[in-house]
Image 1 (cartoon, rainbow, N blue to C red):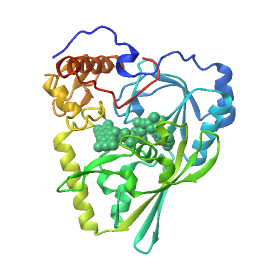
Image 2 (image 1 turned 45 degrees about the vertical axis):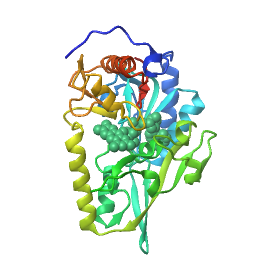
Image 3 (image 1 turned 45 degrees about the horizontal axis):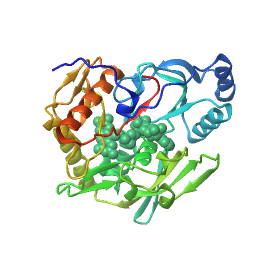
Length: 337
Ligand SMILES: Cc1cc2nc3c(=O)[nH]c(=O)nc-3n(C[C@H](O)[C@H](O)[C@H](O)COP(=O)(O)OP(=O)(O)OC[C@H]3O[C@@H](n4cnc5c(N)ncnc54)[C@H](O)[C@@H]3O)c2cc1C
């Protein structure tokens, strides 16, 4: 199915206004002076760095390879007054077709280590570490606590930012588990420019929410508390969770997406409403409401951000007209559309 739709207003999808001015040559030079001439790249297409595989160019892109580099990049952008965005794996965002005006800091600070202390393991990881990497290492060494989140594309920073969650543990899956349950502390660069270690009280974990949605703090690294576990049981959980996900969700490598597109509606299910509005499988341009899961929009190969936004708006209108329920996008809209 395809459709032709009028342009969508920002208010429809919650996208940020698009009034930024392009980075000037002087600003680019200043950034290069602070971060290295060969490290700040101009006009890099962001699609390759998002799970949707959609998004125009960033005026400038810097890849931070350590927590110290991440701190330096954020400080440089703040002190030079340059608009900036911190990118993890880009698994919960839609980047506009016209890209991002300013500096995108890609977090590839991926060092991590596990410090055993009796039956407890303290897993310290830089915030750009990929969840899958730290999960596999922990499981391999017999540490339990984060195995439930296998198969969810995320950096450690992204996981804390949104309090990563999954219906677990197998086989009952009676409750949602949150990364907060394994969280011990994290080191941040605060909005005020202070580098400090904070605990769960500071982070205020909620459902898809933490203090980092409301303050411009940056997570530099985090420590998780793990317990000794039976490696065979841990491996079984990995397999069960991946199978469970694989049977219900479109496979990211074939159908790029940003996961759930609409926020959870308690007791109803946003996806169920989209499905009951007759939109499962509906295609608009290169974007499609997944035939497997109606709360996931997939890129069928050539989708633009415009296609995705129009499809989101179509689903919102259809559900509102039919059920009087307002669907709120869960993903972030980044840059110019
Ligand atoms: C196929 C698929 C399945 C998914 N399944 C699930 C699921 O089961 N459960 C679930 O909870 N989510 C799920 N998601 C959503 C996504 O995986 C999570 O939101 C994830 O935490 C995003 O992490 P990221 O590193 O990609 O963050 P990004 O998308 O790159 O960034 C998201 C936001 O976090 C901010 N951020 C990133 N790093 C930091 C940091 N170090 N400090 C401060 N702010 C930061 C960014 O600036 C941005 O605002 C799924 C997504 C996909 C594509």
